[in-house]
Image (cartoon, rainbow, N blue to C red; front, side, top):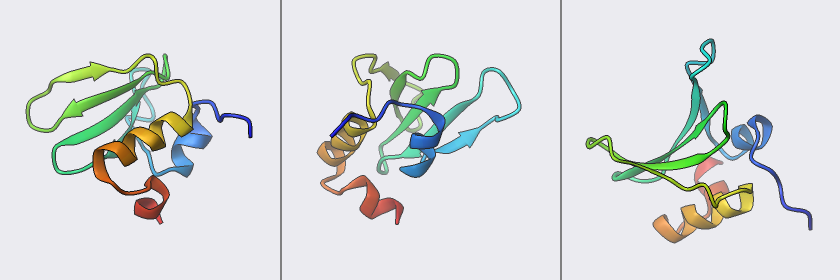
Length: 86
């Protein structure tokens, strides 16, 4: 099975929401749990994880596919991403 690249179509399919769609510096977001959320920058398509309420951002530049995002989500929550989105 071929890995799915991180792009708008694939992000929206797994539950990411577009933020600031009319601006260059827009991004996609997905709540992970009560502590973290994911963001993906429009320009670079780089995944970051952010700590809610603290503004701490950790870029995860080694994450290159949708499958890696879903695996990370499972590791953090114990739930499959598609189970949560459905």
